[in-house]
Structures are given as structure tokens and as C-alpha cells.
Length: 427
Image (cartoon, rainbow, N blue to C red; front, side, top):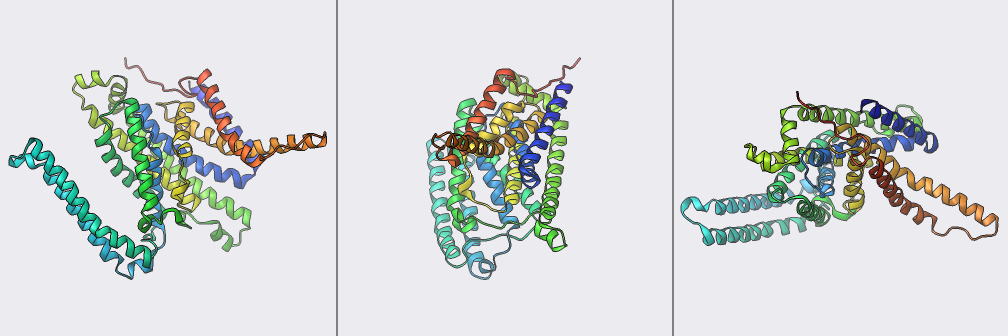
């Protein structure tokens, strides 16, 4: 197994060298930074699916939360918002929201004062209705004022690393709520529920213009490391500055990925990991042994979502633009699942390998297909045939074809992944 893993990673290294030779160092360095972020996201899904057997198809929602978090924390302060009545109006809305939450919690605990059955259910519904009305009575005028006078709230002007941390915290909070609602479901029902919740998150972020700027996008978002412009100001030429800047970003991303790998590996190799494998393989038997299955599943769902939130924040801060409209299920959910399936569920190294491999295949297949189509088109015109039409769109479509081909070959010859899970047998 170790020899096989080393051989695969050696082949991946050769592939990276070939891509660098064909596409150039600036292109390759940029793709490697993105691959490191996707590796962290794939590691989060590996925790949920490979360790816990949880079908999370709402990855896109947690990536959007991470992107919003780094935007809110690192984007420059909006003086027009803080200099007007926006903070006061928004504070009122937050107080109204807190009041609504307290009303609902009080209604849910009304059985302590003797209100039970249908009366309790009616009281809970009424509390939700009153809380919603109170909140909307404050947030609507606040949102209208902010959009009209300041555009949107803006950011806090902090280093992007704080945005990464906040992305993990925000994803953890949402994952707790989602887990409390949906983790009682099994397999395909959980997948459907998480898809729906992901779409709800996307709809909220796209339409809360006062907070996220909606479809108008937010840019440029600062890097946690020096930008190419900073190196150019120090006398470096454009290419050198670009490589130095992306190299620094890549180094930071690898440090974060390595720390996550170390923590997860240590946890999974201990008693906690054995318990999670037992719950994954047979949750009924684990429950009969006294394990709190739902709490442990909620635990692992939150841990995986934290890494997804951090990875989503890393991607947005690297591209320097937060565009809610750019998030698509095929890019930000399906692609992550392919990384785990090809790499190997339940194996951290398999998740990292699959993430880097699939991302490189995804981004390189379009320019390679375009070059092939242009060559064939040129040859066909020289012999009197017609040229290939719509090469740009056809090349983009080839990414899906190549991805499907990779999945088919991987499942045919390595159904458990290229680097499958290896479970130690205790003596």
C-alpha cells in the first residue's frame, strides 16, 4: 500500500511538471494554490463520508459561507456605512432577531409550565410567526437604507487569515443547525435534505444585497500574504513578482492543509476513529453498545464543514472576488465528490491525491482540448474540409467528458479509490 501510494504521488508530481512545462509557471502555480484549497475541502468531505458515512451534497453552501466570511472580515471598511445610521438600524434588526429566537426557545420549553400537546405546538408556531414579523419589521428598513446610502455593509479590514478562521466558525455554526435538523435522515434522504439547505444558503447570500452585495460581486479581496504588486514595488519584474506572491500563498495554504491532515489523522487513528468506523459500518450495533450515534455524527459533520468553510474562504481570497452567481453545483459539489471517489474514501492521503489530480484534470482538459480541436480544424481546412465550429464552447464541454472518463476508469480498476482506506487490525 505504501509503495503504491508513493508511486501515485510520484506520478502526480510528474504530471505537475508536465503541466508547468506546457502551460507555464504562472498558470501552474495558480492551479496548485487552488488545488491546495480543494484538497482541504475534500479532506472535510472525507471526514463526513469516509469516516462517518454521511451523504453531504450541500458542500456548495459551506463554500459560499467561507467566501462570505473572508469577504466580511478582510474587505476594507465601508466608511459610508459606519458614518450613517446603518449600524443603528442593523443593531435594532439584530436585537429583533435575538428577541425572536428567545420567543421560540421559550415556546419550545413551555412544557415546564404545564403547556403540552397541541397547545405547545400552537404556541411554538405562534412564536415563530411573531418573531418573524418582529424581525422583518426592523431588517427591511435597515436593508433599504444601507443599500440606498452605503451600497452594502462592507468589511472589517482585517487580515484574510481571520476571514479563514471565521469561515470555519460560521460553517460550524450552520452545520450544527443543519445537523440537528437533517442527521436523523439516512443515506439518500440526507443527501436530498443537504442539497435543499445548500440552495437555501445560496439564495440568501445572493439576495442579501445589503450584506453580501449580491450578484454585484465584491472585489478586490486582500490576500493574507504580499500581493504581486508589493513585490513589483520592491523592484521585482512582473513574472518574478507573480511567482513569489503565489509561492507565498501556496506555502501558507500547504501549512493549513498539513495542520488539518495532522490533526485529523491523529484523531482518526485513536479510539475516536475506531468509534466513528463502528458507527459508519453499523450504526445500529454501535447504538446497542451505548454509543450516542446522532451526537457523534453531528460532531463529525461539524468537523468536516469547518474544513469546507476554510477551504471556501481560501479560494475566494485567492481569486480576490466574491461572486455568489459563480457558485455552481457541478464545480462546487459534484467535483468534490469525484475527488473523494477517485482518491479513496476514508484515506486522508487519498483525498488529497484525488483533489490535486482531479483539479488539474479539470482545469487542463479545456486548453488541451482546444489545442487539439484547433490542430484538427487547421488540418481539415488544408485538405479542403470545413473547420470545426464553436471550438471555445466545445473545449469547455470536454471537461465534463474527460471527468466522466476518469471516473469510469477509476471505478473500473480501483472501485475503492486509488489510495483506499487502510484499517489496522488490533491484535
